[in-house]
Length: 422
Image (cartoon, rainbow, N blue to C red; front, side, top):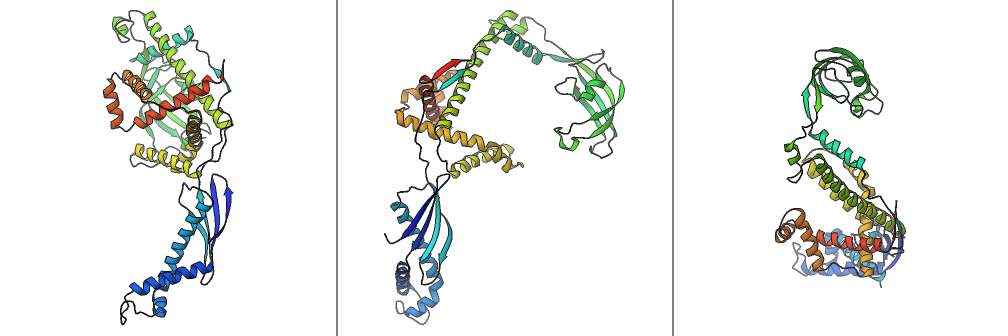
């Protein structure tokens, strides 16, 4: 090989080459380029091919220099990475190019290579399985939540109590730092709940009725969500215009029908709730086992990850945010920072999952995909052909294969590990 080089291995699958092209090769390339220019150059006063070399070098020397440097650097880099048995996954980044007349060309090129994954441990873990038990209290809590969601708000002449909603007109009467830009707030709704209302409103508005007026001083905490009010102390004049209380739905035949034709009683509803909660719990258990498995696989099988993999993944997330915002502004740096850890986890798991499948001979067969599509069709009340057509139109068939492959790899990991009850 005509070149000399030194390769340095850096973190994140980065390889840095310090390459030198000998001056003899540089000179030979110059002669080659000048001879080609002499044949093709059109210079006023000279016939084609008869332009003196001194004129060629004077007139085209700058262009020749750029062409020589570009060609030699490309050729040298290509030959060097072949000699070093390196397969780049990124375009080379050049730096410290030393290119002087009658001297060797020296330059530094950095690239990224695909990560080398050596599986150390893929089975034999111990995972904790959460309890599958659904208690009567779980069912009762879910039933009360349904009643709460289906409750209506009705005007009340009674004093406001916890859980009620009151509508007020508020005027600002004390704001020494001018934290609030508005002075009046019409039809402002306050839920008298310790989870949502500020303590000052809870303390002063429990017991009020329509038409009552009060002056209230509100002290906002230093970590209040609305930054412009954090740490402020403001005074309001409050007039109550409405008190509404939640009224649970009537337990009637119409109420039962909302849960299915076969539901005839509250106990029937609770039976359906129990089945739903059990299905949800089983799904949560599987998701938790999956998370434990992924964490264990990543922890026990470390490898360098190219930075470009992470940035490309984050580019897609940012693009999704931009699409959702529809031209609106958002903090791209914050999005990248927020999702970086997740991106690293997902990329590592994807690479490891495919390496495990390769090592263990785990493959996705046509019947595996058919079975998944059949389940998808049942979930959305579609025929199998309709489901496949919809997936093909949206370009999701490849994702189906990935989903099935992950499920098979996950089964391999869990089936060959110990699962203990919580």
